[in-house]
Amino acid sequence: MTHAAKPDSRYQNTPEDYEKLVDLCARGRVEQFIPWEAIEDETRPIDLNVAFYNPAEFFSQELGGFLAGYWRNRQQSQPHHIEIVAEKLTMRTILRPVAQEYTIPMTIGRGMTSLSPKKKIFDRYRLSQKRKLILLVVTDLDPAGEAIAEDMFKSLRRDFGVTEIEAYKVALTLEQVEDFDLAPSMEAKVQSPTYRAFVERYGITDAYELDALAPSDLVDLLEDGIQKVLDIDAYNVELAAEEADSAQIVAVREQVDEFFRTLHLGTSNDGKTC
Image (cartoon, rainbow, N blue to C red):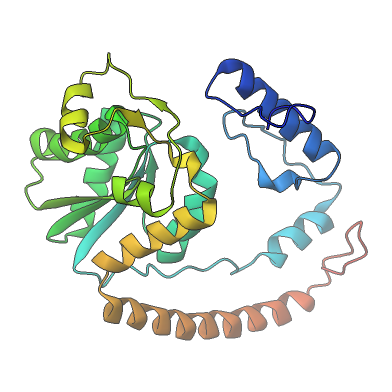
């Protein structure tokens, strides 16, 4: 409901209700009902100057992260090159952990994907030297979302000559709308160039947005889509190799740490000896 005193009030896809929801979420964060890290605004980046109080603090930071954060390319032995393409920037924080887990590149198109991101997808595919390019597409179920998925497939064939290409819509599909009993977000836009094709294909005039899905459900759908195109045996081999890699890195790091301890580089402001 949009108003506690009005039990029958419901949020609609209008600018007024959008502002109400934004204000509600903002107050919820201030009152600590919603964790600050639960919402991220990537459209307003902040650049901070990296500065240190003294060399010891710098040594502490650099050595503390030395040889940390190793990820093996878990896709390197896959027979095909896999890419994720998502329509909305708001989906990035939900989908990114899955993409990172499988080390699959992900592109956020923010609507119809422009030529430059398509070129980068093509470059990664060509660099992989794999036979086939597989696209996992995540868009709304509306005329624009369908156009995004089709345009990505056609453009890579037409503009970059990729003949061995497959595209699968991971979400949102009509079957998923029915399975999760999702409510429509709005009427599909009649002025959309693909409106007629959308209505003929699905037999509906409603539009459904990805945001109607629970984040956990969207994560499950993406993982299920990845599993369907993944060579599981090859993937498990990479996981086992990553464990061996990590053990080797830990051994090297311990040796390097021991060496740096003999240098007596000083003490940082937090009291740690470098």
